Image (cartoon, rainbow, N blue to C red; front, side):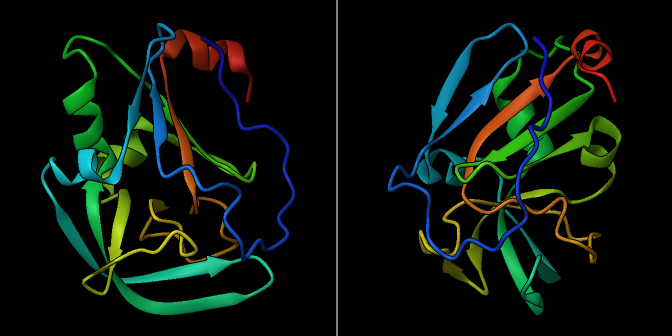
Length: 162
């Protein structure tokens, strides 16, 4: 499976691209699972304080305390234990996306957040959004309105190019 982040605009988008509250977790073999916030809530929850939202064209806001599930815990719950992976691509319903290496996901508290400051995120706020607490520039790794999480193997990463 080849996966890359398609070219996309960085214009701010204040409105949800769809009303669909689910997202898809795609495995390297092409199988997929549709997930909801309830599915995420069934996994171990973490909170990460002092996070900022960096939005292209809107500057930086925060700090916030985000709550949700670590991406590494999501993958541990849904991928076969023996399945190696080298990266994840997280895509928004509006076409924005990012790619995170396994090292980034393992080293940082990379979060699929569903709460902010102790309350559920609204659909307009993202409902489920990727939070990379270490990122403070350019909003290139934070994804609002998560629609797809694609797991990449080493082979797929090599074929996908840089």
